[in-house]
Image (tube, rainbow over all chains, first blue to last red; front, side, top):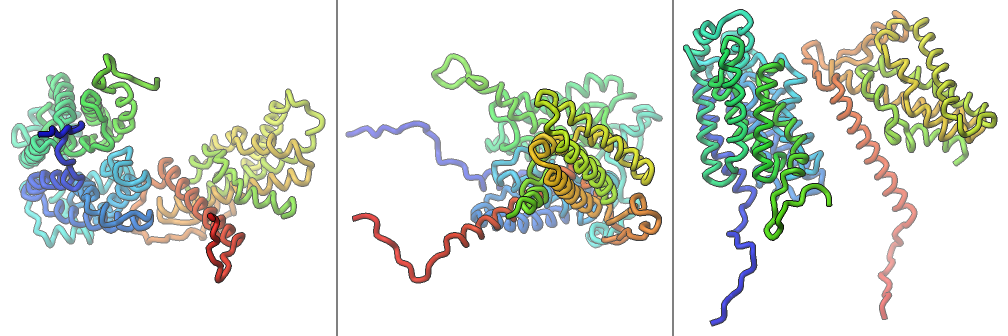
Length: 339
Length: 233
């Protein structure tokens, strides 16, 4: 009996991009459910708006660039970008914020650099940063408050006609804590209705929902543990050290569970195109995002920092890759740099 | 193409200082927040370009190669001082708005580049004409970028034109999108200038590619009824 010699690599069939992106989308479902249940239908409306805009613009860009439209649309990557943006935008933001943001992500974040797999920056975060810099008022004042029910019709009117009632919106917990540190003690801030004594009610469940989705991503081997663990660990370490003095610094619990930390750690910085490549590189990348997030949140002027931290580390990703090349099999040392 | 046509075509399109040579990007990106700023700086730069090209062309046979650059810089610096004093005299508010970028015209590489690259090798008339065309080409891009940034950034066009054209120009301001337009700060900030500048260059490249393709098609017209020629035996 002749033996069949199989050459390496002995891998199973390759994972399709649409499978990866589809899994990411499925894992985002708990997060969106939590956002909708605890806060607003606005997230779902923004999601629909962003996805439709993104698909139209993606098809248009592909047609202009003379690329096969069906092949690239069905890899679902643009839907993931749109979903990430919709999850990051304030739910009562006017409709044109979502449209401008999606257009920025698809046209300037993705296709200008050559489309799928070529973008040096995370497209959704590029769009978020542009919106935050361009429209600071709309981007910082339209966050929802817990325990206020706004019907679908009212939400639609808020998004498309600008009828936002003051009582529906407020600052995010991170922003609120930082703004009131100057005049109040930690106990006084935490006693406010936003925090219920120790943690902001809705935000915690949203963070846990993103965490659950992220763990499924790790279980399905869509992402590795390196990025989320190193980012969360760095952020936790910094906020624990400084947070001992909770009258001057935001405590770790709020850093980890009240902002976009979980969404960022599992869904945003894990973009395989714009993050570092090797496992050691991913640890450095995640730690960098963690440090920058803490620094910008604590000493910066913006309510959250995931977008800026991610973009800055995207800049550094080629540099990190340069110095964290793994040793290849058969060599005693890794070849770093140009030789 | 005559010599002067070629100079004009070079300055305005083919070798445009802003779009092709990418010289003078600092003022280009810094002060083009509105049409009036862009036009003011464009006029000042054109004035300096014309003057420096003319002066450099006149002294071209009397200055040795070794010391030519300091001599050119002296000429350009004196002309910039003249332009600065003129702006102080006639458009003082605009002078204050443009601030440091008027003295910084000295460091605009387009001016030294034309002095060294063209004016010192050509006689007075072509050199002056080249300065004028390069200046107009540079100003045109400045004004276009300024208009785009003003429209996107604040929803107006030709705002504050009285700074340059006197009180009667204050009514030129157009509100293109109504009073409700939310200011798109990105276009006003320098990153927006970079992105819009890139888009303008991209459009120019598209037009150039179209012209080239059309010229190629014209040069080798397909003959009707022509057959494939058998080249192998």
